[in-house]
Length: 195
Image (tube, rainbow, N blue to C red; front, side, top):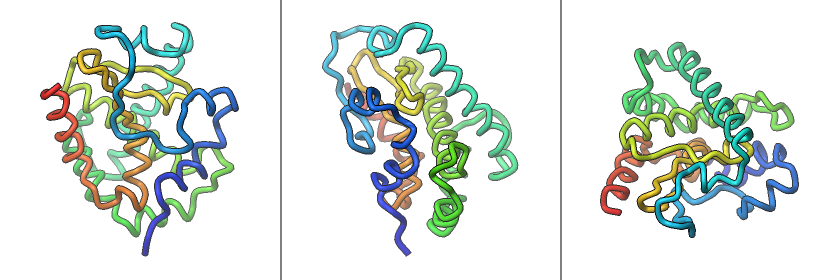
């Protein structure tokens, strides 16, 4: 049983929540690449690169923190994980979210409801992935964007934008259901270390 493609799911569950200005500004019809090289000046901070005002960056940061805290609470019951979110949490997420489980989540999620299970779980996963990757590679910082799930991690040394929320949508789709997120984190860390 195949799951829908990540772009199909993105358009169904995420695209309706963009306004036209943000939809045009993002430059992608659906999911972003895992990692992008930004055409910005070397050494600029994530705050300098962000298209948002300082106040809007704080709003996006708070939304991501809220999703991270929700995941920290939800996943302890759902996955049986303990302690601070870590690579072990990501491995448990991979183990638990099998193709049939993801199929059930998609089936019961109403795209017209902002708090549907698919959308919320992808946002929680993106926030956890970003926080764990930042702990592994402290030189990364959040590059805030809007809506908040357009935020990414940014490496000012390589000018790389790491689209962790889009990783989440891909994992929860046919495109990435069989990919291990822990391996993806390691591959990203290695890519950055070579940059």
